Image (tube, rainbow, N blue to C red):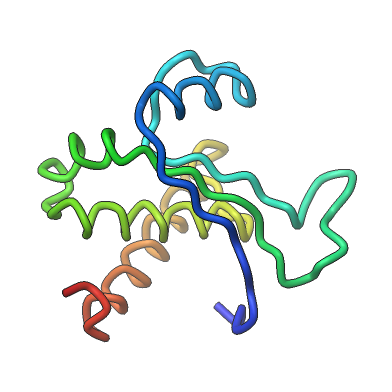
Length: 121
């Protein structure tokens, strides 16, 4: 992705904590699997060009969703990390069908690369 020196923060929480963040920042009063808070866009982009932003992952939701995605718990968390990083760099699956397709393809490509390179063992 051309982000060799990129940084992000990663926070693992439970459903109650992610629901609180989802309600506060996105006005969605329900738990979700991952929230991404990019720092490279908006009115005040980060003065640090390598700082992508923050990812928050609900471990409880990841556990629940792992079977549906054919992953064990760690695989699901890595898939959510890939998904979140794509959001941090500008991909969006909620705006259009085209954007959703592009993000899904890139997510699959990157996740398969992680598996192929043996990072998921």
